[in-house]
Length: 380
Image (tube, rainbow, N blue to C red):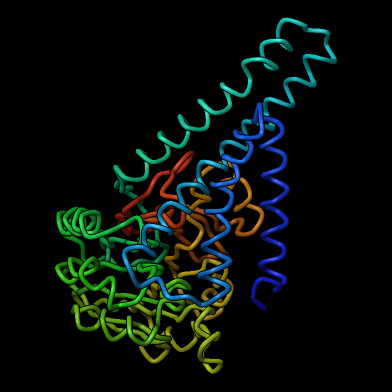
């Protein structure tokens, strides 16, 4: 009972109650309709209040179903509230402009239009999410790149979030697309799973079939840490991946050296206070002159990566906001490294918009991506 009185749950409950009251009285024509509208709000409340705040394990098929329904309700209510607010804004404008015909239409048919529009937006978002990922090809000009490394090809998988809404079939599609690209490296930049090894091992098993010239590399994201960092580290190693925990690997290609470093996610400190991201440990300074690539789930680590001497940082975490209006909100938190290619001094930063989806399996204004990055000599 104490967890329901925690600041997190109280804040969440207040927001959901306010949202419910607004939607129920603006869109519900009678009390049966209003009570019915309470169900999706309750489903949204259950997962964070019962599972997250209560530390309840999601270990059964029923738990998975609860999560999936909750996430769908999150996506639908997002669009329902937005369209309801838009309708009220138009009603206010029509009243101010004495546009009686428009006011009457919005007042009478508005609720039906809001419901239809929200379901349409949810359907479009679901289709955009589940037909993914989209292959995104990115060319990165690196100043001073050794000729032997010109054309180095890296496939990036990030934020797959295997769990309640993404399973084995989607993972197989990602693996097939990745292997068809004949990459030099395949990197998994965190948040690959949302659950324990015991439940998801079958679904992530296809990742063991990833093939690249220099192998596949995995780093922890915050959700991997929540799901059990040590267990997943062991499991991904058993799949043949090189897991980098503030570590590096040095490669030589026709006389040119390049370093692949990887750091732990800041979330790991929640269970192991001694652990924090250390790009300086992942930079392999003893390698001398070399191309240095850092795998860091959270793009906010870019300043540390630049200080450590990296040429390129590959990140994820943001999902590019995933769907409107979070596509706007995420820019307030992560700018300038929100999604796609950006720069910090002489270092490039590429942020993958997510190969899968977290929470609502919805994409609206973004698309899930599998990224093929190709390095080229800097052109002046």
